[in-house]
Image 1: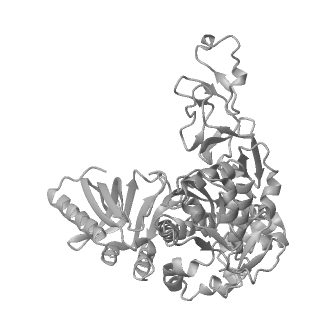
Image 2: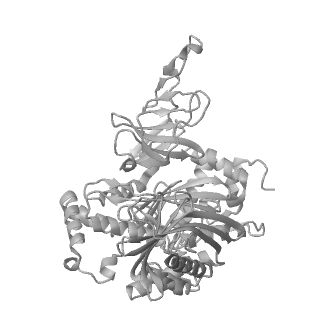
Image 3: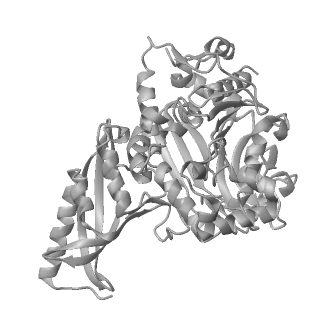
Length: 427
Length: 161
């Protein structure tokens, strides 16, 4: 039965170096344990500073299943509060994002400041004399820390420092933001939201899975893109591509495309680039200097890598993606395209169109992935299929400064995720 | 712009919209794509109805070349998100017709029921067809679908709402 309480130590036998047991994708008891041991134990991405640039700006988020408010107070400081009134627990903020001067619990009228303090209690004289408003501010999430504007929070007061958690992933977060001519992103351009039937780990590992591109995205790579570009570019993502699957130090995942330069592959010379691209490149060189600008530009405008910061943050193309586990077989995904503050309008509009091209709910990419998660969910109900294989590249993995790596269609990145999972689940 | 009450014109617009809806229900995408003017746009905003596609992401923002790419994908034999296809019934009504700068603006309400892999879904909203006269019928300059679900998590919109 998949409904019996789960003994955490069993994880030890279910997560091996080259394979993982199907129960991790189908067992509701393991899902409950993941909420506790993963989402309520480590750092969880809850938003980016660019989503709340002004005092009073807020967005709602979740840590596991717990609703939180990420808000910038009048002095500019970022807070992460639990979204629950201290009186009887009703949520005090209903809008997904917006600007507020205070948070009002509409149930009985308790009102909180942006910094979480309890500002007003109707008919306060009814409480016992010992009642003190200062004892009833919104509960703050115990740990909040940022890197390159990415806001992480943890409900575990003893969580290790964020820098230690991020490991080699930190530099990629910095690079993503450094694509902006001002060093700042703009994230006021909407969100693609998805729900699929399947386990959250299907989307997590798919985000750094290079092996599926030629099959799952065959209609795009083999047909649409070939027609659009007038040439076959599958060599960038096939089994002979120089690109890599990397197990980043810190046990995060990377699909690394930095060694292929699409502009070069398409035979475009810098001097022949459209004016707005030349302007943008000049802007970057001015802010970052020649060498650093060249390094950032190797990302080819943001498509140079897929990054997974365990467990719920992904950088793919121009988007910041998050995963929200709902139940063992239901998952939500939010894809937020980022714009580059100060870049020419054509650059930013092209970022939106490129995002819609592959990642929207009617696009040429993401819907096929979600179909695979559904098929995986159905197939993994077969008890005869005990083990999912993650052995590709085990015999051709090589060390790199960022962590062990193998070919793009290998599974070094996946193995990092499972190591991370195992470590948290057994802690 | 004032409403047009010419019953004959209204009937022609209605017949065109019913035909267009039938093409989509029947997955006759090549013929459907042919209903657009060469510079036509098919737009389904994301998150809110008044978003500007130049600075806000859309669920769908297709020009005709991109609509034609959808035909390539549909014929590839690898269009997994439509394997099996989504079955759809659309109902359109509450039609109003106005003159606009480029021809006509037809505004209608849409209720769309989908069925795929044991899961049914109801989507609904407002359609705006900006039309140009073309022979006995019309061509679509711009079709906008304002879904009341445009801020909800989506399962699969590859059937095209």
